[in-house]
Structure formats: structure tokens, C-alpha cells
Image (cartoon, rainbow, N blue to C red; front, top):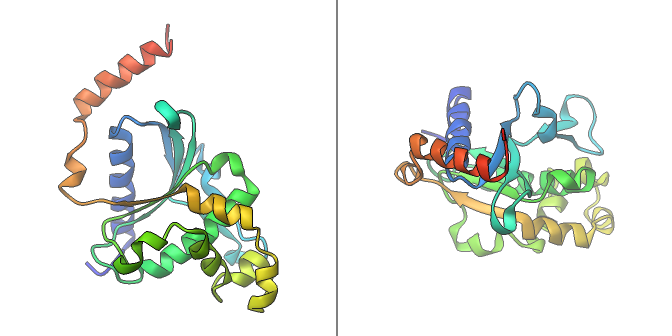
Length: 206
């Protein structure tokens, strides 16, 4: 399978990622980019683009529950790829989108999840979630005009918000799934039993 070579492939990956997150029991609520009521929560716009190129969206959004993550929001990008292909380019754009989203609606941006079925640039893996990587992604010719409003790299660099870049880097999760790994979660039967218990503890429906 050469990357997400069909809409069905992408949709399948989205559903599988959402199910995996939900069955982890650590997600209070999640929604997809086409959810009829909550889709707007994952939609944003490039500040300096126009026309059809201006809006963009993440694949999933939601809120975590439990321990230190309780109540924190997340946005997720899902790539149903079986091998690297152009994942590095997509990740570059993902970081630029995270920077823009955090500037526009920080309450939606507690965590940024990158979910794929294939790693990419493995020798640089430890550098993917760094401020320098966010910086280089924003200054790339594909992003600097639509994100920063400058075609010249030096001028674009002057507009960068260092604190926001660091905040993006600290919130990125790199999640690589596998077919068998997806099975190492609660069964739906056990999940619903735990969900009922958690609802009782929170007083839901009492």
C-alpha cells in the first residue's frame, strides 16, 4: 500500500486510530474532522493564505481523562501509511499547523498527537519533537508564506514566536501503531464496564 492512496484508506486509519484511543480508557471524548456537531473544534485557518488554501483541519480532537492528563485537550493527525513515503513532508506541515492552531485557540491545543503506522527518518527520530524542528518546518518554503506572511526566509524568521515554538515541541506525541499492537487494548465489553464505573464515580446519571 503506497501511503494513503485512497479516501477509504485514510478513513480506515482515522477510525482505527480513534478506536485505539477510545479503548485506552484515557480519552473522555473524541471527535473527527467531519463530526456533525464538533467538527469546528479541529478546523483552523492559515493566517496569510486565501481562498481554498486558507482553511485546514486536524483529523481528530478530544479530551483526555485521568491523572495528570485529566481534562487536557488534544488534536491528532492520522496517517495510515505502511512505510515512509512522504511522511516527513506531512509531519513538517503538521508542526506548522500546530503552531498556527496554538496561536489561534490555545485551549484546544493541550497536546498534538501524530499517529501513523510507519516511522520516518528514524535516524532523526529524537529530533522530531524539538523547537528547532518546529522552526525549520515554519521556515520551509511550503509554510513560511501561509504561516508567517513572508516569502523571504530571514524576514519570516523575525516573526517567529520562540515561546510558542517551544510550547508546540513540548506538546507533540509521536505514536506509531501496528496491526497487532492495536489488539493490545481493552475489549469493547470490558471498556464499557470500565466506562460505566468511571461515570458512576463522576456522578454522571446519578
